[in-house]
Image: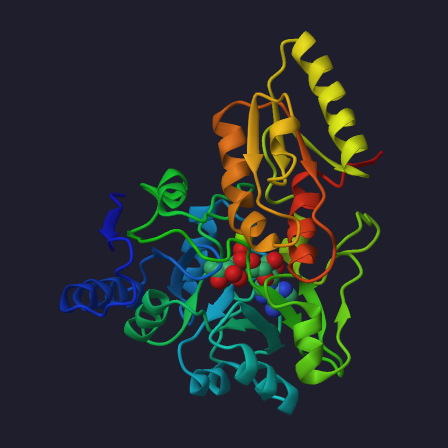
Amino acid sequence: METEIIKIEAGQADRQTAETAKRLQYAGKVIRQGGLVAFPTETVYGLGGDALNPQSAKKIYAAKGRPSDNPLIVHIAEMAALDKIVENVPEYAKRLAAAFWPGPLTIILKKSDIVPKQTTGGLETVAVRMPNHPLALELIREAGGYIAAPSANLSGKPSPTAAKYVMQDMLGRIDVIIAADGTAIGLESTIVDLTGKVPIILRPGYITQEMIASVVGETNMDSTIFHNQSNKAPKAPGMKYRHYAPKGQLVIVEGTPDHVINYINSQIQQHHQKGEKTGVIATEKWAAHYNADSIKNAGSKEEPQTAARKLYTFLREFDDENIEYMYAESFGDTGLGQALMNRLLKAAGHKVVKV
Ligand code: TXA
Ligand code: MG
């Protein structure tokens, strides 16, 4: 299959020029006719198909190389669309949507009959999100209102945060790629299960537990998020896969700065003696202290936004540079740090060294 690239120049996403409108209209038609279009959102790029067409869901799983028991998120552009795809919208779901949509929050509710089981991986529930990105919203409208979209990476690769990574993974596998700016947030949306009395966060993201609790009160975290409990299946089926895994071995190192730097550098020395290539994900303050072959500056610990935006790029770059052993400083565990550490832990296969 030949993949068509629709390029939207940097900084032009907000401007609804006639040319952009025409291109999105065309891409929307491709989706309505059962085709697949990759598109930017504020979190990561999505791989979109018609959420109400079971054939489109099948195509998405095939293009990603993803198991079909892993449900897709349905992306909408209007509040009214939510009522059509879920059985009923509880009052606290309305408040959350009002507070955080459009934005990086995905809610899970009982699905209505028009949503095919292929889209929800066989589940009776459906995940819904209204993304905060002008191109995504316009594409959803042009596509008929409901786009099922997982992240636009091949299964097992980090979610794509730039158009070039979508192209690396998806050229020749889908109909259209809308190539625009890099994504602003860089980590996938927060997923919250609203089928019970109390919301349960299944995947942490930019919208934090504190933010959700401030709108609806008590909010829980799925207990599998930060631990490697092989006896417990996570509630979001996708969280059980070892996503985000780089080719080499990543280890997270926690401790006082001196201890962390000394430990990592002594490991690096041993690797170099064996001719092995090394990498470090470091906060900007300490980046210059490491002797690794590849050093990634993740900004300051106090502002995890930068590390969040860059993490998946770092992991892909390490692969491209054939780095075999990687070390990462730890980024705290409150606010956005929770989402960041969740993805880092997965990438590291939960390997943490305390020094
Ligand atoms: O930011 C995002 O959410 C991006 C952009 C493209 O919107 N999308 C994304 O989709 O990350 P994906 O497919 O890579 O991750 C969706 C996650 C999976 O872990 C899946 O198992 C879970 O959501 N999920 C979807 N529907 C669910 C449901 N009904 N119940 C539980 N988990 C569900
Ligand atoms: Mg994904």
